[in-house]
Every structure is written in C-alpha cells, then in structure tokens.
Length: 111
Length: 113
Image 1: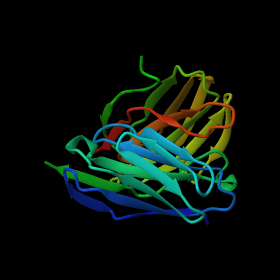
Image 2: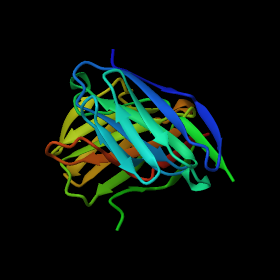
Image 3: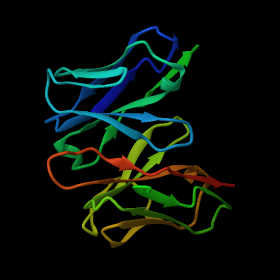
C-alpha cells in the first residue's frame, strides 16, 4: 500500500537555526513527490515537485532533496514567517492522479 | 485573481440537512479534486474528475455526490449530514501534461451540530 510518513510531527526552532524535515515514502512507480506549505485556515500552497532520486530544488531558504526512499526539506536560517505546516505528498500509478499525503510537520520559528 | 476558489468559506448546519460546496478554477486545468482534511490535519482524496468525468471515487459514503457542470467547476453535494462529516474540504485542480502538481483552494470548514 502506498504510504507517506513525515517526521517529526512538530519542530520548534530559533530564528537562524537550520534544520531538516523528513518524508519517507512507499509507493510503486513514483511519478512525483511534492512539498506543500499550509498556513492555519488556508489551503496547501505548492512549493516543489521532485521526480527522480538525486534531484534537488531550492526556493529562498528552502531546499528539497529526494532519494529512492525519502525526501528532505532543508530549512536554512529560518525566519518566523517560515512557521507553517509542511506537507509531503506522492503520486504513484495505483492512486491514479490523486496525491497521497503525509500528516505533516508543524514548524514554529521564534525570534 | 484567485486560481481556485471555493464557497462558502464556513458552513455550519444541523445533522440531517443537505448542503453543497462550490468550487471554481480559472487555471484552464482538466482535472479537479475534492479532498477532506480531518481534525488531525490529514488530507485524503475523495473524488477526482477529468473533463467532467469521474476518475476516482474513494471509499466515501454515497451521501456525498460530486457534480461537474463543466471543466472549470466541481461542486460537492452532501445529503443527510452527520456529525462525522465535520471537517475542512479542499478543492484542487491539476493541468494536463507532464507536471502533476495540484493547486488547492482555500477550503470550506464544515461544522455539523
């Protein structure tokens, strides 16, 4: 069964304290791995798509990487405005075109 | 301009009532979805429509019925609402072609009392 597990569930950082969020996945025939950011009371906002092991994508303080079993979202020198829930999702052939989401990591960055 | 919009933003209703949530996308996408996010923030697919045709129908009670009048709209009608239906419902859309990322609406928070 296709599955996505994110860790940790919650992460508290000081401003400027870099860290990484983990997304482990089990899917047959990965078509894509996606990272989203969700702020309270809002819909998920698309950040990155990764398609194959070894691929990396960057946006401001965020960098996403992908291996055959997991993805990492690295946050460099975070700011309070980076506080949000970060969701990882995969798309595999079994689910058609639907995304299978993990339960998310809630990041809190304090100044 | 909002890419994926939903109405209403909040919906409070009593058990047994019937209600609808509307979704519209102005991205020109071919595929639209309904997801449910429970109290633990877990997002799960409910339905998927491609060019007005139902593609995915996960294990959802038949009280839930999606309707797609055209490619840009996907509405969700819920009959005989139950307490367990309380959740946030998100509409999403995805374009044709090689990229699979989906774009989400702002969500509709449904509260059944």
